[in-house]
Image (cartoon, rainbow, N blue to C red):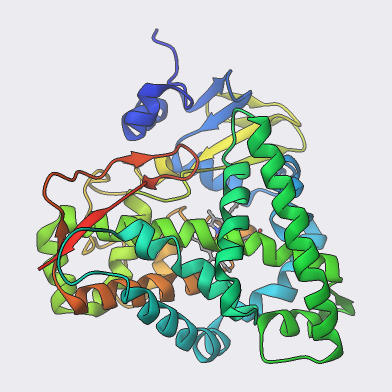
Length: 398
Ligand code: HEM
């Protein structure tokens, strides 16, 4: 009769996957006092919570709205589907490849200049944290000289979103960043309405679905959401893909010989070690689940990282294997939908293809300049409960 693992404990931080295994086996529905939430850990339960509309996204009203304003991530039902349809076409297919790939390539080339040919460097600081934000600033059509300004707002907003303990200084800095970002972006949105250009803000100004268009405030809020939804996630995905490949030299060699395997390495990385480890939901009614009832208006934490290790869903779940048959070779990246790392159902990540392109370009360029290995004496250390990755990855090239 041991107690259910606590997702805020030091033991959990050190080994979340051990805790997830105990939760799946013994506590499919666990009450977690410190977060005032129920925990779901099995694949079938997490999948249901993500797909069943009775599990609403109202939790984002306190998780994200104070720093971003109202965005699609906190909407439900018809409001969500309409507003999502206004933004999602910009992140798919031809649009993505024609407009975004050259931007990703250029920014990655610029940042690769910061990587020394000899001696140690931290991939996180020199490259991974910078690329996604630089790319977002560029696709919004904002000046490159403002990259650093955006990095400042990004850091404050990311700290706010991860501030589980409610540190007032972090809260104040997050809200200040929101105000500064609004003061910067709202005049830009107004100017793009007057004279549109070939950039994402202009596209969003013109977007219309069923007679509904986006207000200036909604465009500003969505641009702000991109900093966290598309910044921190992709930043950490680049880091974790490289870490997983370095930890599996045979798979690193396979990717080096055939760069088309990078997509598989990303899909498997996000299954094995998803950067977004958990998302929340708020049921609108009482819901019967394996292990008990989740009451209406409670907070439910869906443990995406646990679902991805569910032994009833994946063979050898604790092994990193980019060749695993669950990743369909033909469907390749689309098979990301077979696990939960980009979410599932109606809130499935809008930027999955952009993330794929950014990670693909980054890993390909890194492997092209040399063979990365850990710097002598360095061992990567994962940190974070909600969003998890090594905080530094000190490498050298040979
Ligand atoms: C939604 C993960 C990259 C934009 C989501 C969700 C997850 C996720 C788990 C679902 C959240 C939920 O259901 O509560 C990731 C990961 C990424 C990544 C792991 C990188 C590897 C990006 C990028 C963008 C982006 C590059 C930029 C466009 C969004 C947006 C949503 C979202 C706008 C909200 C969709 C909605 O509510 O309908 N992402 N994401 N993401 N993501 Fe991503």
